[in-house]
Image 1 (cartoon, rainbow, N blue to C red):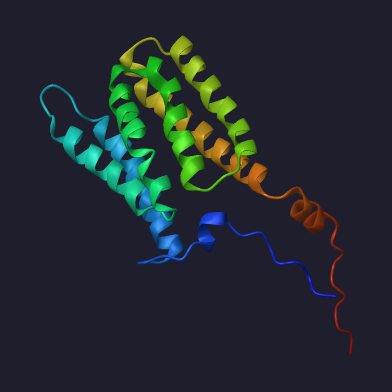
Image 2: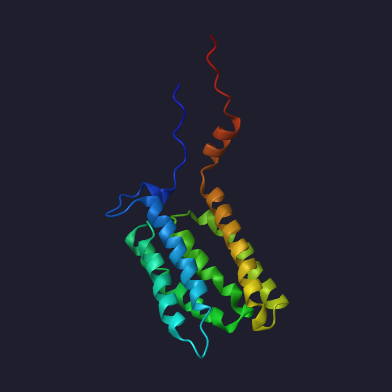
Length: 178
């Protein structure tokens, strides 16, 4: 009996016009997150990070392997959120928008939106605990952990239940004996 095919990311099955799936996925993620972090280094005396961080953030969404409209949809809301984060930890709840964009770009089913809960809760927690801008690095670090955990949870929610049951209950293949 043939073993069922392992679950594959929906976006990994898309035909790409250029590049390789994993390379584009890693580059997109680095540009999205790096652009966000770089933009946060802007201040009234140094406005260059506003331009370079925004450009990197937008480029990250554009290179992600996904259907064209799915790559375009999160650009404006996510870039707006990146700029709103300049107001401090009280705005961390707005990270729900880029997270929804991530779910869209990764072709996650609607049930994966359950993973949005911790991201929103983190935003409320950051707004409550960190009332001054000097706590922004701590809020960003905490939010990064929550976003990564929620993205993995969304991935787990996206897997068909049958493939999870098959993997958990599949017997160990017999070994060849001499």
